[in-house]
Image 1 (cartoon, rainbow, N blue to C red):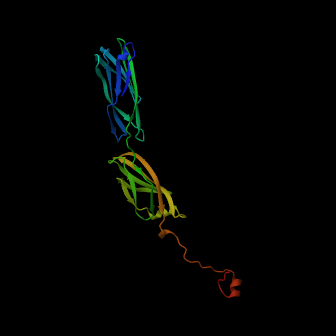
Image 2 (image 1 turned 60 degrees about the vertical axis):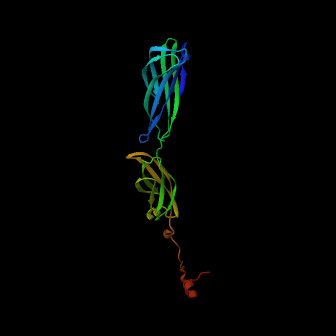
Image 3 (image 1 turned 120 degrees about the horizontal axis):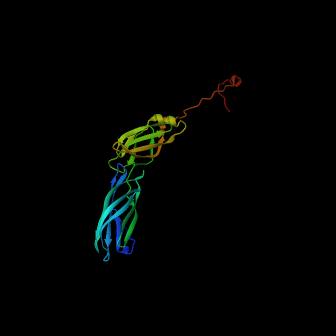
Length: 250
């Protein structure tokens, strides 16, 4: 809650109070429904009757002017405003909503009061996270997903060198994948290589966001070339005829 006293000769006897009573998240649309309320509170010396007071309200940049009927006696409170606002969050699900609320009495020694407040809204969890993964070509590996909302589904994709593809769709929190052996063509001179895994997060058919992590793939021993034996042949004919043997090496 934020408060301000009124200007004017008797303004210090009346206070404007502004607060947000609750907010509700709309996860799919990445926004919050924010409730805003305001009231007047008087001490034992203030009373205002029969006044129509314009209220100038800005919430998250959008403004409006609304009139309130003010009839309040001493030592009292009067609710003069209550409304829900739709506030969009940023791409990461974060949002601080800025509010400005002004009430003009402008009669009987009471002027105006303005309250400014900023409300950090709870973060809306967005795209699911994925950790770096290591596997071996031709062998099954498990890809785990840290899901932020139990209703979300995922499409899991890979890229490795110039090759890419979709591993699975409609995934919950993990998927088993056997990296195809032909990915070895992307690392002809190495026994391992680095690519990436991307997880697209969906709520129904709406994409929430994407996260990527490193993918390390090893070439199995069965696919690694080995050197068996070497046969050396002397191509010098004169030496072969002289020594009467095909292969002579010092």
